Length: 126
Image (cartoon, rainbow, N blue to C red; front, side, top):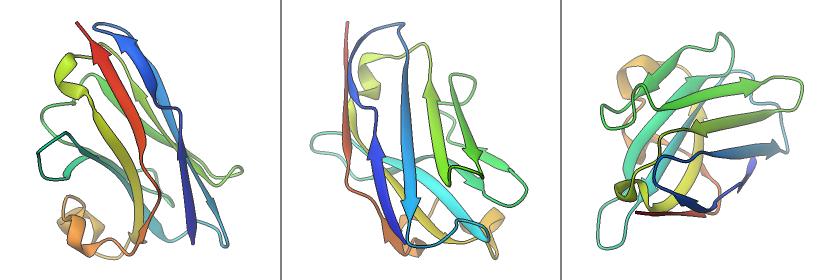
């Protein structure tokens, strides 16, 4: 599976951006897909995840109620809609995929993801 992340850019605080993660090579059916981010000098952290088959979603507390993860089966793509952005959301965002088996228990563990896309940079100005 090859993952291509896009949609990053510059936004003002309170603004919105939508990230896309397009998969190629095989369908994402049977996979869980997560978004992670790494701010300068910080560890990569979990942001949101979705199981491609049934659309179950998972969020970190820091983005819950502001970000929405979704998937488009026909386009083999996962989206991250980011609203009410804050300067602390500034980071490089990565999408990653792994088998959705046991996903509900392990969605936030970056070491369990097998496939990673390149990052897309998000900068939020105050």
